[in-house]
Length: 370
Image (cartoon, rainbow, N blue to C red; front, top):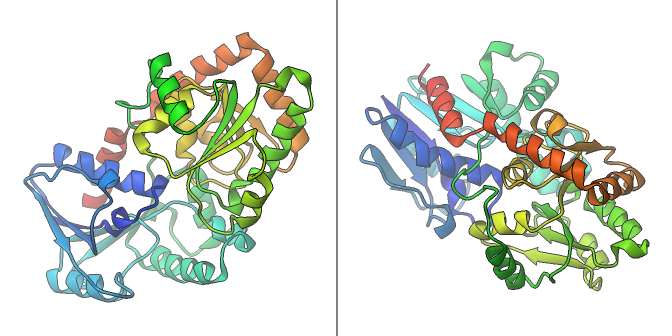
């Protein structure tokens, strides 16, 4: 069987959860399946941080084209090549394709359906157009959480439930682990100019849906107490979109460190050095940074919504994402109660046993070939 994969997202400079997802499945497919042939398409140069082993049954095809690549150059190649299966790891599907080619699309989230004002108008139109077409026309869908599956069935009631399979993300167990040395943490925190003090950390893109203003307000509430004068807030992530107002708010605050783009290999130490990890998002399709934080033995505080309820659940603390006061109270309790923080650490480590990229890759291959 020939399985075609659109891997063009691995060419991008910004690294996010969806690109980590594609990367790790390509690292596993060749180990799990040595018989079938994988046709891997992209349009430029892979990001050096997003490269994967080239197994003997991998064929890498770089197709250069200046515009609408998925619908033009890539679509034509898929129509000409006629692979048995095409996997689209993102919300799109080429219009031009052979009827002989079965299609599977991964849907990561539908945040743009519920929070349209949190997206640039141009991106919103593109997301709606391509996702609507892909969700309705693909032979099968992958949802990265039951929350995402539920949203798919709500937005597209005409879709048959058996067309959707929930397959959880995994995490890299080789780098996200609890046994990270204090020396390593000191080295990495110094690299990002984080003072040798207690800190709260957020990991992710800077964009409105991430609800960072509520996190900043809660942090500033804590800082009013003399007991937290040594506390800092680390916002680890690259800019996404509509981030300007947030940056203006925190740029001159010496107690808030915005790292900008960071190297993936540095993230485990940044997480491990934190007192607590916070994911205040209004919506997450999966919430990979929360899983990575739990794997590093860091207590997790997350918004009580979307997939975070099932991914974090009782292994962390859930709060009302519309209330900075609620978040302040939760953070205060986690920071002050060593016993509770240790219980959260243990629960988080136990929870991570349910997730792995190998499991994700195996289930994905079975769905693609079924």
